[in-house]
Image (cartoon, rainbow, N blue to C red; front, side, top):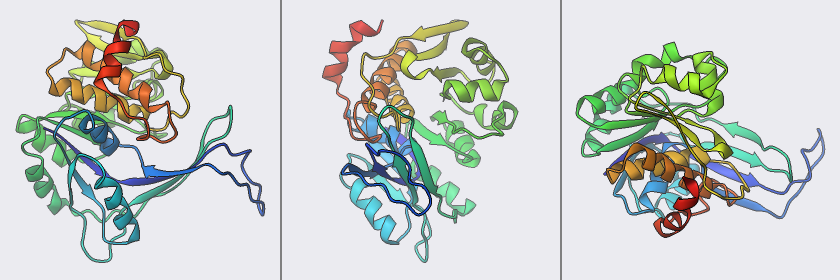
Length: 298
């Protein structure tokens, strides 16, 4: 079984916009899509859709946004439990994603005030205790250490911040089996200029460091050196959530006891597949399609 810990986000996606409005102006589009956002939950759903038993520990709350999130989760092949406070709680994040033809995306996000008590950590660990793998991000240090000490393999991701530092992450990474920053994050935290050099530094801390290279595939540390795993041959429409889908593919492979190069190759497939539609969970991966494309990814 694969588990995950994640505060959930709703993505409101406005696509094919002509541009951003100036103050006092309005722009419109006929293309709108609402979906669950990225993070460990998106990685977990990617793996679960492929047939893995999956369980999500999350913090939803009991407001209108929480009810909406539950309708999305109920459509996915995962079990989930809300560990958030039951009264007066608004815990769901909301992101407006704006996409423009031939341009990068823009975002406006609301991050709900965190009301998570540390006393819930033990309950989360109990809920995920049967998981072979757990996907997690953020600062859940107590949960990570406890699960790792009980034999669970932790797959850890990190988001960009201006103060991103490897030294600050080392207490967490010591308990992590797989760490998968993107290239920009890896270079920032290791103060290096080359992904290969960053990967070497990360290999001193994490058993399986992986650096996501976007459209160029991924780098894996294997047998004392950096190994490049080529990308899947997809035409990208929207890169939102691609890194989460990548990690879901890696988790699926690990749950099937594949070799790490094969896990990363499959992650490149699931991550690439996610970019072929608007929204991080819209396009669905399949083992049949992967088998057809895999020879082109070597």
